[in-house]
Length: 374
Image 1 (tube, rainbow, N blue to C red):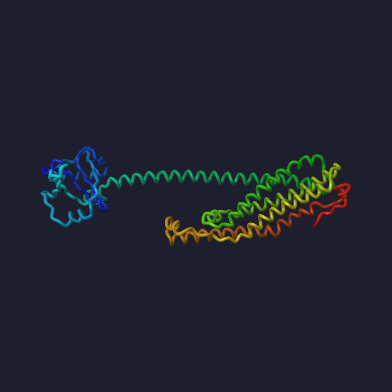
Image 2: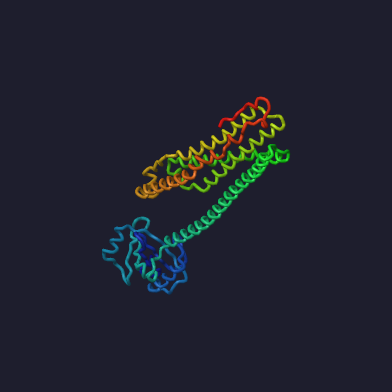
């Protein structure tokens, strides 16, 4: 603001809404902020028109005017001279103290056909640029983390597959030689004796992961449906194949164990019954998980109207809920198509009961009369 003699000319620039920006030459004083860059360049031209040389520095101050005052500014006659209008200031005791002169320019003229000088807008732009940069950096970190997680999962899946197939190769080799010769050699038994633990641990890990899949496809809430939609049917197919290999390996290993005990005169009827029961349990557990996956028929319970309103809006939220449920149900159908054939065929092909035939070479005493159910 200025004195009537215009010793300190002040330019008022009306910006968006009820905001106005006041520009004056000189370094910032209490309550004023520095003006630089394009804003200072534009201010030099305006202050030059007010009778001042282009200043090396300028200050800005922002005010909010009531709408009625802005309307009166536009509608009523303003007193002043040289394009300036008088404003009245009062002292602390409420008495008239001074007439100040104010001159308004348009934002386009103030900035040379660019938006008006708005320190708040400039600050917001700088903050948004900083936030955008932080988001880009965070996105890159998340992508790096996602790649690392995917690499770890692929590595663990390959390690699991390698462990199972390597153990199965050894067991099948020894089992084939036993079928050809009718006995289990000492060296062959030493090669497979510790593989039962590996196969049983893998059996439990595979069923645990398949159980998690079964829980996911039985979604009932919005969040559960989103997790179901992210399931990988190819991983499920790999797990089912590995489980078939594990069951086959356990069946072969069970037969080799009975033969080795019979050769050492250590086999009893109880051991044969226990081996048969353990194998039945493994197959039954795998079948239960498969049934749990294929029998899933749940529906999603949509989000409440308030949550929809606060996220995508009522209409957008309802459409979002429908899309998430459709994706989850489609994924469930894909997984069911993978599991159902395995459930009907793979378990039968294991032939676990047929792998434990009761022959005189297996046992002595009571075991000679024992027959396995088929």
